[in-house]
Length: 81
Image 1: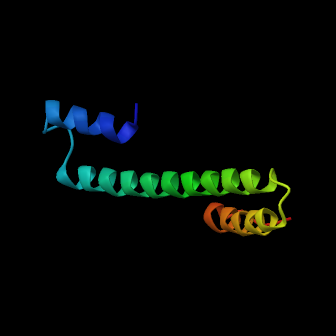
Image 2: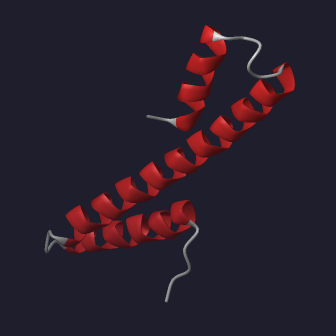
Image 3: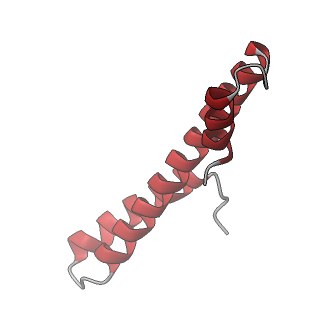
């Protein structure tokens, strides 16, 4: 289970276990994790779209595949070789 959810469950059971500041830090960390997960999902969607376009021999789809390849690199932060 998500470590941030577990901490909130523990906090609900015993509010004295963590300070408000600790919970704010956890919220910030959870937000960063969510943003990273969203970026990874967007990169995966772009990779799927690029593959789906490339699988079709039509030239229009090849151009579209190039678009999705660029989107993949934009979303993933990886460098093109």
